[in-house]
Amino acid sequence: MKIGVIDYGMGNLFSVVQALDRLGCEVVVTADEQTLDATDALLLPGVGAFPDARRRLAETKLDRYLKKAQSQNRPLLGICLGMQLLFEQSDEVTSTTGLGFFKGQIKRFSATNEGRAYRVPHMGWNELVMTNCPAWLENSAPAKHVYFVHSFYATHIEESELVAYADYCGIRVPGIVTKGSVTGMQFHPEKSGELGVYLLEQWLKGVKVC
Image (cartoon, rainbow, N blue to C red; front, top):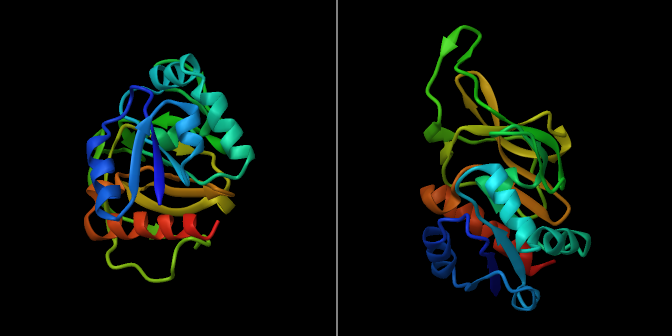
């Protein structure tokens, strides 16, 4: 299976490429549309600020390419900032329009929740609570915890699109969302041990049957 990792200058690509390699994928890291067209599925990584990433997607015209891919029902997985870019809008730094594949807004964690202070960024291992089971995910999972590193999270989402969430100091943080051929993971599956590998493997199995 060939996976196209979208290179738009905003991703720490090494760990996710290594994880896909270990799962037996042929991985191409590129911004070339013809090369991406020849892949079985697309992966959108992301590290950094939402406005910078959105600008880079526009400058490279990869935003238009991703919208075309979504309209063609091509499998797409967004990870961390890559997931956040799939939503309608973000408040990070300045209000910025996202790709709009999912309903909802990206907002920063506040300093407190119901008078309780907590650390921002949300960084570390949290239990993933499953709410819906998409077609690509089997019923059982080998572990419960995944690894998060982020200061912003998705809010006002469609409940039908939520697959799993983490509870962080009383805040429900969407961890996995899915709609049609598009999936987002807020955590880093490539850094999340047994469960992260399992989730990537299950997503890849889903790609095979598309």
